[in-house]
Length: 337
Image 1 (cartoon, one colour):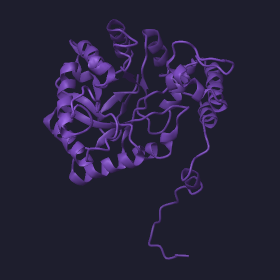
Image 2 (spheres, helix red, strand yellow):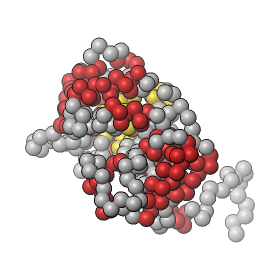
Image 3 (cartoon, helix red, strand yellow):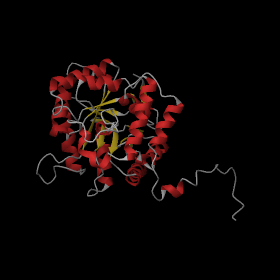
Image 4 (cartoon, one colour):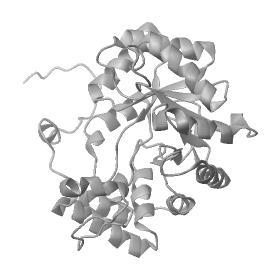
């Protein structure tokens, strides 16, 4: 597995990130540890969790696996925001909650530091200055190495970057957004913003809850049992979805790959993407996902998937698409007509 730089930083991470949301729920501890072993054996070094996954259970399972491992060879990411109790300050991004949450995550993970600490969602109730100044102190104290954000709008991410820059605080170096062939909205603002600002992008839900894994087919009248995507059947079982699924299946057959590998490979070849987050319920499922590395879609195959998944742009993006960036001026403007 290749290593990539996380955005504009000097931090190298594996081109796939292992998501651990299923640890302790869909996957028991023994299965979770086998998946971690398989990921590490394949060259994976980047692991993502969150304090809210299983209300801390995921972090605990990962922490027990980390014991005896060479900690410096791994990049461990977790998140903060979740309300972990009914106490008034048990959630959000206030200074009080962040300082309590980071120590709790460190205890559960059994480590002295977190490589990537991410705000799980924008907190509209807390001044961004309070959040960012607190995160900056964690970096200075050595508890956290890098900062990231998840579930932010373009305006919110830009504001956070600008405020950090103005105060000389540690900025967000990573964005964890929802992104896949059936959900490409981050291409409107968040992805170009991340590229321009040097922010690494680690997409979650790259297979859209199984819709892009090959389990869903056009001729189905009901969703497969036991799949996460079953809950979104009424919303997703549309002609637009089947158009994408058909294209994924077609390219998979051509390439001699599974549909999941094709969908993940498309993300890996998207500009600005550092490492898609793969979350599996079993070692077999993870092994299939790991098969997306070590090869490439042809330009024609990549374009076919991109075209099949394209959707009409809403305003103002439809208007802006007609006015692409101009060549930069090389001198003072004299024609104002």
